[in-house]
Image (cartoon, rainbow, N blue to C red):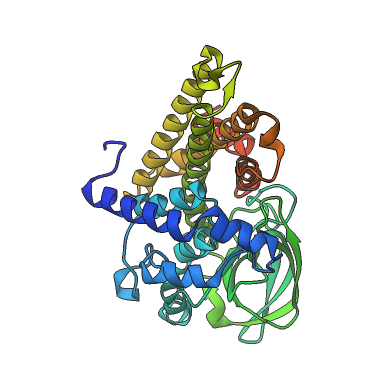
Length: 379
């Protein structure tokens, strides 16, 4: 397939670009909520507006009240979220949690999907248990208790954990911590007894939690999919989230690059625009090439995911690793080419660097995914 958008997707991109630049801008959203030390780190009014645009339910099936779109379309919105550094629960709610809920029972879907589509609900996912992304090892346990389960353990880096109306939790229902099988996903509602959150403000001003489950009682209806059969659902959710994070990373890289190129066209030194210096032109050209390669890798991963291809697993890691490298280059070059003012809070370029650092770690950094690519390629 061609690695660019078709006519309908291009129209969606135009809509998302205008909406995010007007309503999700850095001044209106990121700086606004950061400077007020907002405990959620994002605006619920914007989330409702996104629902009115149909964005929140893009990956929800039409039978469940959503738009039934694919990851290419979700990626279009995510790229604009990244370009504008818009604080939003779209990735955790509309991509990760929505991908898991596809596999839920009618009761689970009916309980949570209407709130997502309407923009009244925010969801989080609790996967990791250590400082680094290692979903191969799940130690949090869910033991049989009456007609349900008792959940015990802890999770780290739960984005929007304290704000979420529901958290998708990966827990072990059988086997040892490193076993591939024996995983079950649970929909844990907000305010569940014996669940606690230690909120942490991240470098990009978003809020994550270290969440503890000290014997949280769940009924059998909280199970997403089948008991002990959650690894396949978890993997599907991770593929969707990684490709989504890559799309947002492309937006971060593009936004930083555009801001830098604009600055090269305005800043004068020694009586000349600094964009006229050949050394900076070479660096800008190299950066443009890297960002476009990262965008192509991400679109390819989205297309494979939408087509349920066996290669989607590999390409999701290719995209996540490549985007991490390209976005990292974009924000570093951006700060350096801005010179001393690039280190000040007055200029937005530093905010792109902060968002890139948080996004790179989410769902696995470049080294983790480069290792997966090597492994899946037989090395």
